Length: 428
Image (tube, rainbow, N blue to C red):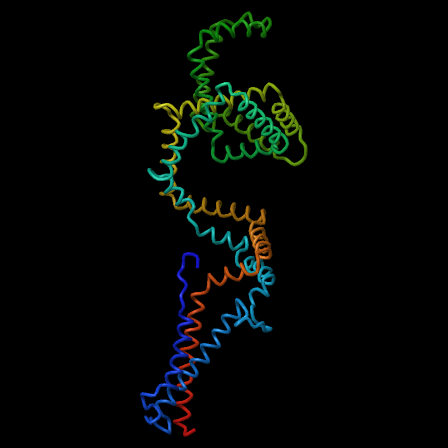
């Protein structure tokens, strides 16, 4: 047997039953028949009953076990060699059996018990798998990545084809208005838009302060020309006061959530997001979709994007190869932060586990993975030679079946003892 010693307990129990029966019947030394017990029962009669029943049980179980795998003694009877005769029926039953126990719903339920996030936190902690990843990036990824910026025409052409295919896919499959609307809705919910407005306001205020003299010289003639005859009353001092007022307004916009300009900007963003998510083909949706598709289709954009990707990959490879590279330390800090967050936030782990289990279950269900495996097993078993099929099963269960034969011999013997003892006690 494969990696497992094949025992002979069943044959040994049959041999013991035969030997015991022959000894009781043929041995001339012990006067077993003269040793009376009770009710006319002698010791020889009791031992005969035990070994006869044991022999019958051992032979019956030997026949039953052998009939599963072959024709006992080479004699073909109607219900022997059962596994070989029913190989196709067994193959057909496997998909039904497995599908009943390994359905996508059952898999998803079991996956929900797995702590994926906890395992990820453990893998991201110092040492172990993450160090192997870092070593792989340093040793293996470097040469591959740097080739994109080193004049390798084959890799450049492959990258350009990939970029073209990716942008074609994006143009065909991505609903830009819906995606931008969802992004803006998320930004509103998380107040990212408010932080963005505050950041822009602070940047603009600082830039006005640093470039006030230049802005005054630029804006003064523009305003004077635009104001017509009223420009006679506008000078550089007016523009300076205007810029100072703009700085004060921007500072207030950043600090005061009720500022009118701030509220106007945020409400305009919300209104634009709503117009993008509205059903039908609105003007805003149409314009954005058209601009998105035209941008992705432009040769200049595609060439520039491919060049950017090549340079980014090459620089990543150079960074990984250098002793002072920043990618690995940055990755390590991100891994530490994520590991700490996952380890300390049970609610986050639970949400991630539920999401991962749902995604895997969905993939298994949509891909009909369980059905594919069972159908493969069905076909594999049907195409397997009958003798190989039977031998594989016999190797797997042989040792356990030997205990059935042992039990048959032992239980048969004790049943024979019990019947003979009861008959003697009843005077039979």
